[in-house]
Image (cartoon, rainbow, N blue to C red; front, side, top):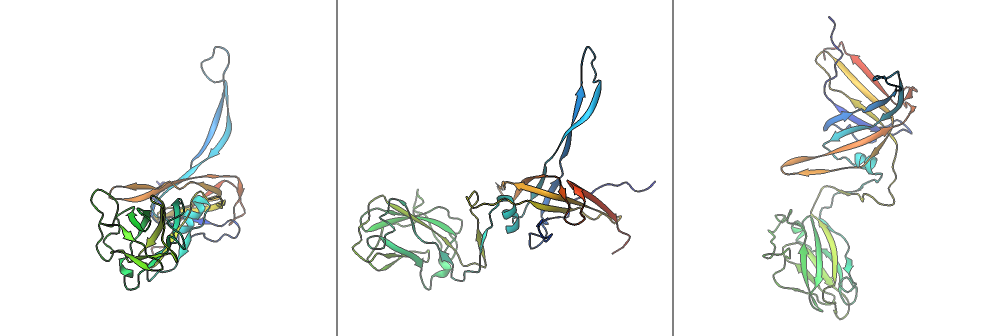
Length: 301
């Protein structure tokens, strides 16, 4: 008997640009859990009278919904799934801090009477963590600092919360006009405004920081600037020991959503769904939804 035409495993998925056929990602998606082609078709039955069984059957509407379970997050995938291109930053050899932004009222981040700016203290760059900060005015001239996670508190100098709170300073920090005040152990300075400091108690401002890094990226999912994009998808199966391989080519797909699962002591994964529409294949000129191609290689290599 001849070998059976079975399919085994998944090797890679490559999203490609329908306008030019080029891959959208720098390399194929290789950390793949599953790739599912869900083609279903309704069957219409004719019933009537006292008969228990259908008098006739015909095919109804056909639907296509596929999915792919991925355990990696390249920028191209994020762009395809969300319609928003991530901002990719070059290495930050001294770390970085964002600009201040007022949240509750406007007296904390204020160029004359509040905190004029935030920056990295020269010589303490190694202490800057990956963190989000809230500054709260506790008097006209002093502030408390809150940090939203301790995930990077071992960066440089060890960092600690005050007991029972996410505040990091044991006593309020005094903001002095035109003077840089250090947030101890964090490698970050707050510079007072140019005039008499006069903040309102309870007002807040926020900023974020990144440690010394080789690269970083950020994407604002759900932005009004998001632009969904139809793409092609090429999925390759694992090469079997008899040399057989399969390729699935989705001619024109629209990917929707980017669910991300975070689990205890587990790698994150995302199951993305997509739908295909009838189209002309970029590579062969064939018309339809998708193609399934098999090859049995005679090469021993």
